[in-house]
Structure formats: structure tokens, C-alpha cells
Length: 386
Image (cartoon, rainbow, N blue to C red):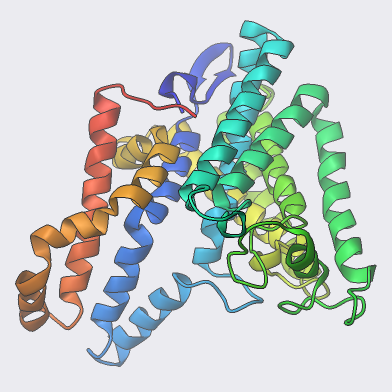
């Protein structure tokens, strides 16, 4: 992703950067490249130091862990937030690309990026070095690629109203499929693990390696509502760049719309449970609603009030988000950090501070390495695009 192609917008007749999109992308990737592990280590360090610290540590641990099946935690929010921000960036960057190079060239760029990101996903999960049965055909990067590609093609051919209709049709259609199409040997309307339509389709028709053995959280059918997550981001991005609304009202509108969408998601969840593992329609609304609210808050702080210095590390990370994601899998920043504060140093910290302090130091230093690398790339204007 090249920083020169990061979001820009026109407001009141002047070209200006939408800093909040860069910040939100970096905030999201911050957790992926080590923030989650650091917080989990902190939660472990707090355990056993009194009722208050136990409660705080327990809360942090719950929020940094996926729910067993139904429900929603902060950790469940990280992946859909990235897909939502991808949609926002599409809405800002793709029209500029069309204006500069034409629709046909833009389509070609979209298809190339989609294919490259999809192939990177296959390599990320082990590539084709073993038998076909060991290849993970669908995964996190592959889902991002498909969402990016489909949402981009839709934006090239539809206006905002058309995109909203497609998004609604996806959510309602997925609900109908999951609710009314009977699963062989189980029946219709089941949303339980390994007993729902999405899991059944993956178990019988998804080739290669399933991430959880009998099912895959990034499977075939559940990728369809993930596209709706991206489309909601596209609609948010189109709203932000419409040029018809003053920036403070953009922030407020995103926050209010996000609250309404989140509420609708939880309400729908009473019948169609909020389940990340199969990306239910209610999950789409809950995650997208929170994403809108967070975007609105950051937009007000950075783009309206102009407070941006605090967010510099997030901008650095966001500028090379996919690159850092891949490097994190190859380098394992925490393993590098363990060479400095592991072993006896870690055990010394456990004795001097608290049990778990050594582990926290390793993950905190690993996160610092990731941020430092991101800052170095940013200052050197090295932006590796996908």
C-alpha cells in the first residue's frame, strides 16, 4: 500500500487528508502485530494481586479472547474493523484512480491487487509446499482480498443507493439461507458449531485444509456477509467524501449512525445470533456499527480538531499495514524481543515486579520493535504496496 495513494478528500473546495482513516487503519493493525499479546500478558501479570487487579486483569483477558461461539468482544472486533476500513479506503481512493486512469485501468488494478493479496494469503498459511490437502485456500488475507475485489467492482458500477441495496440484500439473503435452508441430518435454523449451513458447506465442499479441522472461520458461505462489512465501509467513505456536509457533522453523523446500526445488530441477534465464526448478519451490523462510531470519534479528534501528533505511531503502522502483517508472521517480533529480555532477565522481572512481568516485557518490547520498524519505513518513505 503506497502512502501516496492513502485517502484524500475534498472539503469546502480544498483537497485535504482524512487523517482519521490512516489512524484507524493503524490502530487496527496495532493489535494484530502485538498489541493483543501485550494486553494478554498484562492481564496475566495483574492476576493474583488483589481483587481489584484480578477484576481488571480478568476483563482485559476476556476482551482479548474470542468468544467461544456467540457474543462479541474487542478481539472479535479487530478483523471486521480491518475489512470495514478497507471499504472506507476503497471509497476514497478508487474514484480518484478512475478519474486519473479511467475505469478500465482501475478495474485492471483492482483485479491484480485482489489476485496478489489472495496468493499472499495462501503463502502466509504455508503455501503449496505440502500436499493439496494441507493448503489453506481461504484465510484472513484471502477474505480481505475477496472483499476488496468484490466491493471495488461494485463501486465501479453502482452508486451509493445501489451499493446500499446490494448490502441489504446480502445481509437478508444470508439470514434466509442460514435460517431456512435445511442442513442434511440436522434441519433448518440451526446456528450451532458444526451444525449450521456455512460449516456444512465448508466441511463438504471447501478444498484444502480447514483451519479448525471440521470447519473454517473464513469459509466460503461466510465470506458473502463479510463483503457486506466492506460495503458498509464503502458507504461510510462515500458519505465522508461527499462534500455536502461540514466535517463536525460528519463526525456526529458517523457516531449516531454507528449507534443505530449496532443497536439493530444486537436486536437482530435475538433471532440470528451474533457469531463471528460464521459472520452472521447481526455480527456484520454490530461490528460495522462499532467501526462507524470509532471512525466518527477519531475523525472528530484528528480531522475536525486537528489533534494528530498523538496518533503518529498508528499512521506509521497503517502506511504499511499488510507488509507489517506479513513480517509479523515471518519475524515474530516477540521472539526477537525475547533475545533481549527473555530468559534470566524475564525471570528477574517476575521476581522484582510480579509474576508475568517478564512475559509482558517481551511482548511490549516486541510491539515496540514493530512500531519502530513502521516508523523507519514511514520516515524513509518506503511504502510497499499490494
